[in-house]
Amino acid sequence: MDTIVLISCVKKKEQYPCKAEDLYISPFFKKNLAYAKSLNPSKIFILSAKYGLLELDRVIEPYEMTLKSFNKTELKQWSDNVIQQLKQIAQIEKDKFIILAGNKYRMHLLPYLKNYDIPLEGLGIGKQLQRLDNLLNE
Image (cartoon, helix red, strand yellow):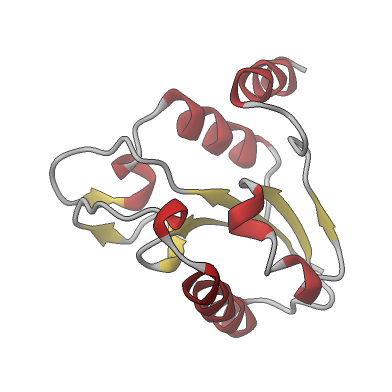
């Protein structure tokens, strides 16, 4: 069984093509990524509004797209696409998923994942940042 961490993308990005893990530059993303790496998972992916499941080392161009602008149909299509991508690299019924992403990113994914944890669930951004600081300092 693998452990896979899923982190949501963020709006604040570099202005030039670079690896996905370097493209997103908000403190929130950086702390999520640091926490994800501290867990020593099998894999870490970014949930990108544009690309779906995104590898950390994939070089991409900056983009402007957010799930907030997606309607219900687009959001379901995006989620279905991510599930198809996950099925290619994981055993979604067996692997453990740690999800560091808001409800819009995860709501249509969770019915397909049998083993998951959402460590920041129910917390606002400020509380999530606090919790990440605590987790990173443990």
